[in-house]
Image (tube, rainbow, N blue to C red; front, side, top):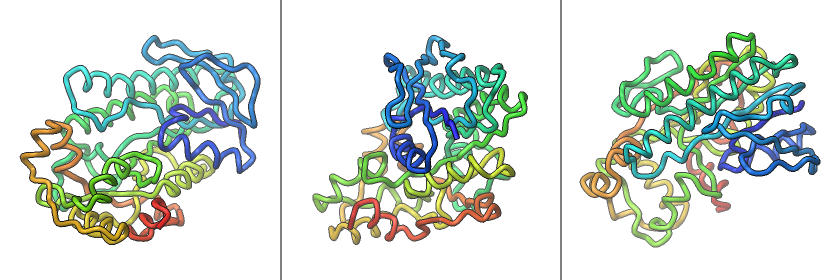
Amino acid sequence: MKIIVTGATGLVGSALIPALLAGGHQVTRLVRSETRPAARGGITDVQWNPADATIDAGALEGHDAAVHLAGENIAERWTEEKKRRLLESREKGTRLLSETLARLEHRPRVLVCASAVGFYGAERGDELLTEASTAGKDFLAEICLKWEAAADAARASGMRVVHLRIGIVLSGEGGALGKMLTPFKMGVGGRIGSGKQWMSWVAIDDVVGIIKHALRDEQMSGAVNTVAPAPVTNSEFTSTLGDVLGRPTIFPVPAFAVRLMFGEMGEALLLSGTRVEPARLRAAGYNFAYTNLADALRHVLKK
């Protein structure tokens, strides 16, 4: 297939593109830098700028699929300006891509868009959440609702649209796990707050596998929880990571310290959590590479 990819240099995009190329696909990266006119090893670059609503639409004709992963990094302290950028980067970028693809004469058959388990809100306790569960009412839920709605033009044009509600991605190349590693390797890691908050995780290999599955499964559309079928509490995650690294985990981070250091972001991403079930993936017969947290951590950390 000829596949458009945004967010190509991010955590997921960096893993996805080599996997697509290895499968014999051609990749067109939507980038904000200067375009390179010649394809390089199956990759072509096309310029866009969501903030200015500019995109080289003509260069997108004749593609079979699009994977939209771009968005501002969420794991930073949320000022009002930061929150505006978080929302606009997702909503504007998705709308620009969706409306552009919908107007093409030879448009893609499928658009796979990133979303997040933040759709369900941060205060759901032990409730087991599936794709049929209602949206939350906090800032993360607001972002996800608008993010997913921004693809309506593609949906209305007849394209199959899949929204991947992605959990905590485990990768040795960065992301949430990368931020945790330093204190744990130093032996000063520990649970965060009460440790009772749920962490719905997924190995990077499965994120790539799920995207590939969504591209080819003609029956898959709408929301798809992109998480492993074994969410754990923060205490369980902490203990397992310590075991894999061979380090103690006896230094908890109190909730007041998290709030002091990270404000609203810390409350939403570190002290709260969601217990999410990949119901639609199970029904679709997707075969997870990693369902056990310890195995996933050993794999991504090469342990």
